[in-house]
Every structure is written in C-alpha cells, then in structure tokens.
Length: 435
Image (cartoon, rainbow, N blue to C red):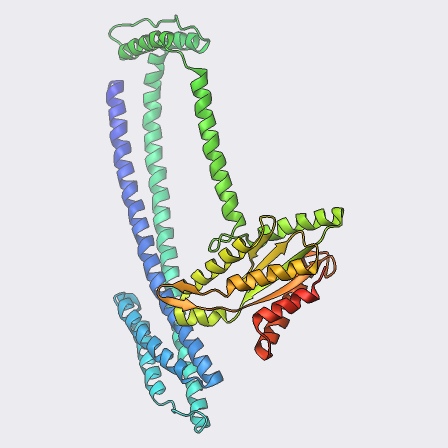
C-alpha cells in the first residue's frame, strides 16, 4: 500500500471516528439541555411554592386577606406548571400527588373565614393545615428534583465512560496504523533531511534532489519551490510591529473594560462596595498625612420595597438608576458615590472645610432626589434619609464612619416618621456633623 493510500485510509478512519464521537457528544449536549429545561421547570414550581408559603405566612402573621388572594393565584399558577411537567411520565405519580395536594389546598383556602378575628380557632387550624400541605408539596418537589439530578448524573457518567472507551479504542487503532505509516514515511524523509537542515541554518540556496519514481518527488519539488520563494520574499519588521501594537491595544482595552466592570455596580454604574472601600481607604490615608477633612453620607431610599411590590422590579431598577445618576450629577468630580445595598448608597465628600458646605451639599441632594421620577406612564415621588459622619471628628476608619452615618440615617428616618420631613432630618444631621 502506497503512502498516499495509507494517509487516505487514515483520514477516512479518523473521520468516521470523529463523526461517531460528535454524535455521542451532541446527544450528551441534548440530554444536558433537556435536563436543564426540566430542572428549570421544577425550580420554577419550587419558587411558586416558596412564594405561596410567604403569602400564607403573611396571612397567618398579619391576617392579611390580600395575601390569601395572592396565594390562590399562586395555586392556579402551580396547577399550570404541574400540567406542563406532567408530560414527563417518569414522575407522574409524584406530580399527581402534588397536584391533588394543591387541589386540597385550594379547597381549604375557600373555607378560610372572612374575619379571622371572629373565628380564631378555625383560622389557626387552617393555617396549620396550610403549612402541612405546603411542606408536603415542597418535600415532594424537592424529591423530584433530586431524582432528576441523580438521573442526569448517572446518565452523563455512563456516556462519559462510553466516550472514554471509544477514545481509547479509536486512538489505539489510529496510533498503531500511524506507527506503521511512520516507518514508511521515515524512509522517504531521509532524502529531505539534508535540505531541511540547511534551510534551518538559513541557507536559502539549498535544493533537494528530485528523485523520480519516489512518492516524495512532488514533496521535493514543492520544497525547492518554497526555498526559491523565500529568497524573493522579505518580511517587513514595521508591519509586524504595527500588528503587535494593534493587538496590545486591543488587549489593553479589554483589560480596562474588565477592570471597570469589576469596580462598578452592574445596574447603576456607580462604584461597587469593594472599589469604594479601596478608594476611601486611600483617601483616609491621604487625609491623615495632610490633616485634611472629609464627610461620609449614608443615603437610603425610604419605602423602596413597596415600589418593587406595587410597580415591579423594572420600575424599581429605574428608580435606583435615576437616584444614582442624580447623586453623581450633584456631586463634585472629587467626590465618590457607591451602591452598597439594594437601596443604599454612600457618598464620600472631600474636602469639606466647614459645616455650611456640608449642609449645602445635603440640601442639593435632597432637592434633586425629591424631583418626580417618570417611567412608563408612572410618576413617583420618593423620600430619602441621609446620615452624615465627619472625618476625623466621628471616626478615622471606614467602618467607624459608616456606622456613625448609618446611625444618623436611622435617626433621620425616625424623625421623618414622627414630626419632621426627610429634608429637615438631613439638615439636622448636617448640624450634628459640623467640621
């Protein structure tokens, strides 16, 4: 068998093995995708059960009949989800039991008294029964997910073992075949050895004898043609350097982008808690050397949770983005703002020379944050509470300043609920934090 035929046969065998291996891999990927979809569907059902548990807890804790209505809606949603999941016949018995339990829960909800205070014993008994049924459904749904994950694990383990065996057998066959081909190939390569060594030393004048009748005749011709072309072609160092510079610039841009994403909040684009702590630590060290002063503000959006509950998370996110933008636009370039929690922001002001300057900043922030927020035909007017801490009077460390500002912010909240507005509370905090 000639060398060319051997190579062709090797290619055919390798292609068949690759095709078979790709088929198994595609099947594995498909199984993984199907498993993910099933797992996601069961997870959604578990989320519905958790939400239902929360609503029934609110019903039991606060006797909120609106929570009962929401729980009824969630039982209907759970029925729809179970209807979709019942297509998987493997878990039909457990799903049927969950569905039946959900129906029992619906019936019990209809028996819940319209005035729980007049029927305390009935309400308590029903609440206990609600909890029992929910725990049963959650346990069974968890058991289904556990079985699904276990089944996927063993299926993948079997397929991976099959792939390993296939790879071992196929590679063994290919290696043995190629070893035989290599022995034939080595004899032909001896005629090219001298020319290749000369070319490696930079001798572009080298030529290989084109021995007619050999399978390496064409290879020798191409080798000689290549050495002739190399004599005529020169590589421009400037072009190579330009290419290197371009690639370096692209890598630097990617590095800068990754650094920005790591140091900024993904929603509001202000500093993250980690980046803010690092920059504030540098600022405090600098102020300690220069005997400078600064102030830290702790800003909290009042009653933000009802915004999410009543209008949805999209409007809640818009409120957070708008608040972050308004804070950033109100401050100086030397100041810093960061989001450290769901609706909590901290601001570092540097330098702050006197109390009036701090009062002016807080007043500007309150004026800006009290403007209407418009989104999708919804007009919102929010309140904020601001707590202030001054460096070095209230502390010289990050945690000390944050704790003082946090306490002052909550004092502002209490004042706002009693007799004062958020604006007045912030101005009082500015008085307490005079530099």
